[in-house]
Image (cartoon, rainbow, N blue to C red; front, side, top):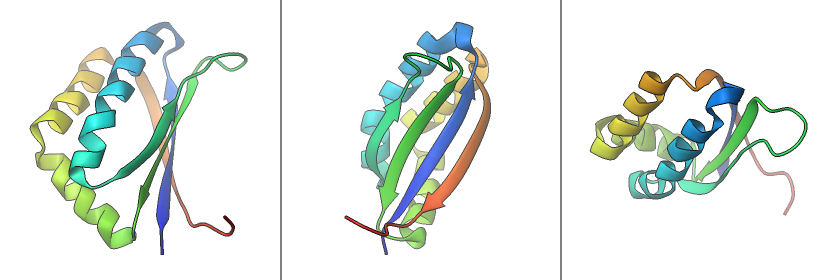
Length: 102
């Protein structure tokens, strides 16, 4: 069963540029580590402090293997460190979704 991880980020609205750099970096890291990156979305109008990401996997086991690879990938580690140093992510929530149509 395909699993899609929906990530909701609360970001510092004054540091959106830093989050955008962070999100763009994942476009090469996530596929290399085994995830199918559907995309990252930034605020445009309305709420200015919420961003989203969607990443799909073949199964929960594939997600767990991806997380293990991500924790040892030099580019992934560097991007996590960048986020910690810049402090643009205030909170992060993950929801695991399964398809019901399509």
